[in-house]
Length: 152
Image (cartoon, rainbow, N blue to C red; front, side):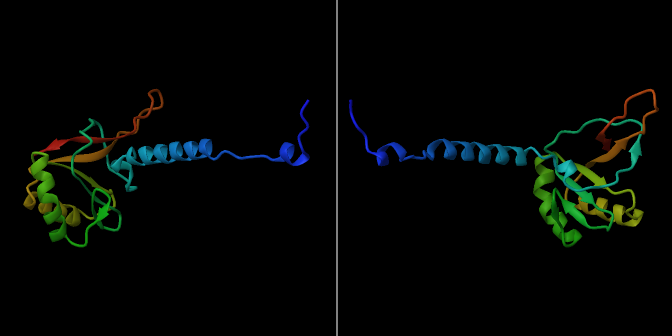
């Protein structure tokens, strides 16, 4: 029978390898989850309603106007419309001229037209206007946000 000293019995070691594995898995999870955030939901806008809606492909260039009239390309705020045109031009060529357009319902009509004109100057030939589905009657379930069809 071997006799161990009290120090050998009480010595506790802590292995960091499993903790490092868990931390790396969490980092990977959050990196993937952050990439899955939809750009449509990145800017909170009060979109107008439409009775007919359809989904558009997720990889379209997206131009948005918030309630204050600020213009965004994806989630990046644009300083002026000339900057928007310069940054949007290569994206419209890659998408075949189709651009997703989102505008808050409180934005003035003149501002919407000015931004649409800039999109056209950048090579945007068709717009996919983002809308909310019509408020559904009480007997049918409500539809979520979606984007409308394309306009010439």
